[in-house]
Length: 303
Image 1 (cartoon, rainbow, N blue to C red):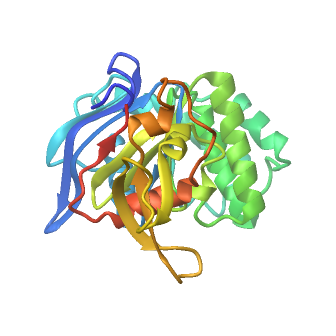
Image 2 (cartoon, helix red, strand yellow):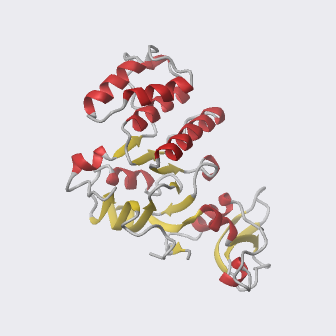
């Protein structure tokens, strides 16, 4: 991996080496190499079926890889599952709530399953959102259910948070509130989060790093601002000087085919090595360009 493709294994919270997973004839992960820096919030973006959930499930030891290995906070979840799970807070797409139990009941159950669970910390997070502890789970809104799941994950005081498309079924306000609670927690606790989504606009305000996963391969892995700064979107007849074509797709309105270009280093940073003018491309266009590049395109690591 490139020098900026993540941290070294000594400073990475999550590392994958040559990770592959097949389900019969379907390739879910194809020789994935990934290093998520400690203290970061990384957006794992890709379409449905890209392999995002499989990657997270392998990290949780819910799925065994066919090849390669993964380490979570320095621990291999398949060799030391209990130890690895103590270091991970997990939020699934569908909140794991039990209809007949109250919010407080869920915290008590989490405490019984996780010896280090900090129920007071989880209660404070829920209190900030006005979610009563005596409210039954079957009366919670979708956003409240997601916040309960996040509060439980945060209550583990885990070093690594794995969030598998938790925003998918939330309305815009609930998504904003969820992101804000996550941001506050990561900043105050110094933990690391891998936040999966198939919609980049849901996560770009929260994350500092972008990983694009498509067809089971890492298509791009770099800091968010670098992704914006080092790409341009134009029509195919107007390439930036010295740029390399990434992929083409229909522009907004569907009336013209646009091409995403990766800029040459001199164009991205300026001929004198200083930062170029602050011209940027939207992260949504960056993601679309790499996904449009096709299943045969190798992932790029930006240095």
